[in-house]
Length: 139
Image 1 (cartoon, rainbow, N blue to C red):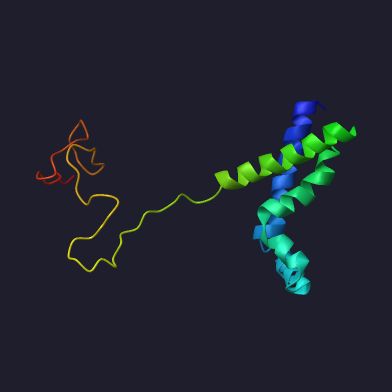
Image 2 (cartoon, rainbow, N blue to C red):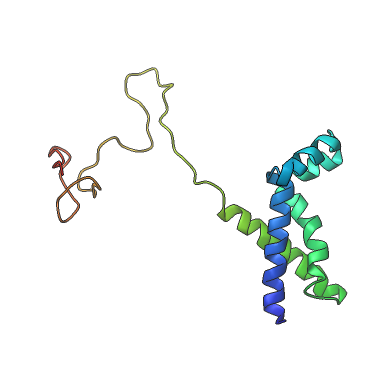
């Protein structure tokens, strides 16, 4: 198997196993039971942190790619790093919410309630743009 393909397989396997251990219940709630048995010790803290756990999972996975000590070291760190990047890609987007705690009548929003000249997905205008004062046409 090609070295590049072996690295990609090691990264995907590291991400999958780390995600299973850190974030999932597992089949038949095996991971839930394992976490319960670990209690509140070092093992529990290790399983709660994807980044920490990926280092431990990537160590043997790096042996799938390289055997020489210096190559293994960089493959180990690269495999863990790539798994962490994959984990970040799968996280939900940041949501900006309205600040309702304003005591002055004017809310301090990051986003404006109305915009002029911005595409409206509900507008039937063929350009997708309408003035904020013009109501959207019903379909």
